[in-house]
Amino acid sequence: MQWNIPNSLTVLRILFIPFFVSLYYFDSGLSSHQVNVLATTIFALAAATDWLDGYFARKLNQTSAFGAFLDPVADKLMVTAALIMLVEFGRVGALIAFIIIGREIAISALREWMAGVGQSGSVAVAMIGKIKTVAQMVAILFLLYSDPIGAINIKLIGQLLILIAAFLTLLSMVYYLKAAWPQMKAK
Image (cartoon, rainbow, N blue to C red):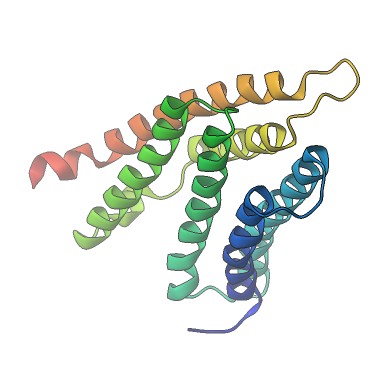
């Protein structure tokens, strides 16, 4: 494993997870609003490291096989941890979380299989996948914060955004399956 800036940021994203989760389970003396603010901040920092590790990998020409493996794993761990927390606290329905987490597992497996048959390029990240990720991250941020800001119902906005993210999740899954279908049919 190469210890470069992008890989360090990816590892940092993984290290955020226990801190993020522990906020909700250990009595820290913080109010629920303070916990929401802190959890939202940690998730936002993790999302920023996702963007930054890709930026630095390209800018500094520090791409690596390890980074290509670990980056999506870190993303999926963080999103899965957040969704499980949000389900537990009644901010996201289990079906929505299942759609998002299930798609991530299915597409990861599809990409692994396609790489095994030498066709990984046909299921490379597409614009629909990037849009889905942005919608998902913004929705999770709103749902983690959850508290109203004046008359603005942040939780409701987050719930609407997570529905949009779930729709985009399904749409992107169809896109990737369609791209892989010729190879799946041939094998």
